[in-house]
Amino acid sequence: METECRNIGMTFGKTKALQDINLTIHDGDFLAILGPSGCGKTTLLRLLAGFSAPTQGEIRIGAELVAGNGYVKSPNERNISMVFQSYALWPHMTVEQNIAFPIRNSRFVTAKQRSNCSERVQQLGEMVGGDVIHY
Image 1 (cartoon, rainbow, N blue to C red):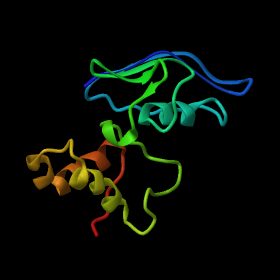
Image 2: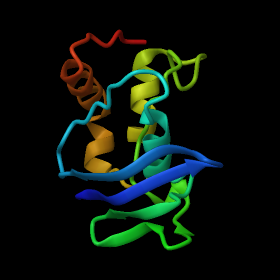
Image 3: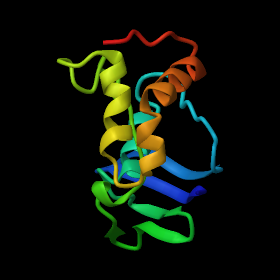
């Protein structure tokens, strides 16, 4: 499913964190957002995930408007994942357990995908150039 940002802007008081961001993420894309501290990476991710509302523009997932014109669809109603800068989402879990959690628990994952969870965790680990240690 395609995700699209159209003319996204975000301000905090008088500070422009993002201005006129246009981005299309195609189905199957693997995206990394890089840049110096303070350039708006986390702000953009928070907007995509639904943790914040843009002050300008709109975000669509598929054909559906999920943010814009004063509307924000809640994070739990989006098929979006986000890995925070912290070393783990849940520090009491291993890397493999953190990766497996959404595969095992998301309503967007099919029964077939759940049954191949360990294989998918390994594939995702290889995609980012690392080995996933089994627990």
